[in-house]
Image (tube, rainbow, N blue to C red; front, side, top):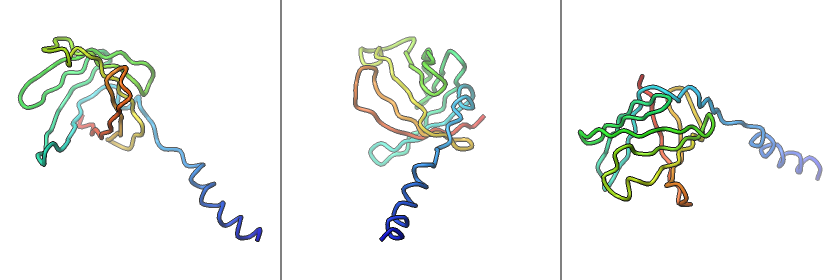
Length: 124
């Protein structure tokens, strides 16, 4: 009985000890690419991030947002030139895991509990 209990507990112990990589400072600045599929069509966004700004190009249009870092893995984006009420809302970003040249993140409108996830690749 004890042997069966021990064998059942081993996978739980191994999973509990596993720490996901999270080197967020490697992704604070640089050039990045975000790909997403919308209605079966692939959309690519490229952006340059400095310590204080993010300059994004999407569908041939460029927009700039300020960045306020909350900690090494979380920041708030605020568009500098919003064109409508939706663009005036700040977006909270949180890096969940990092690996080599990519990171998994979650984001939401500040104050909204509906969160979405994505993956970003650092290209420079």
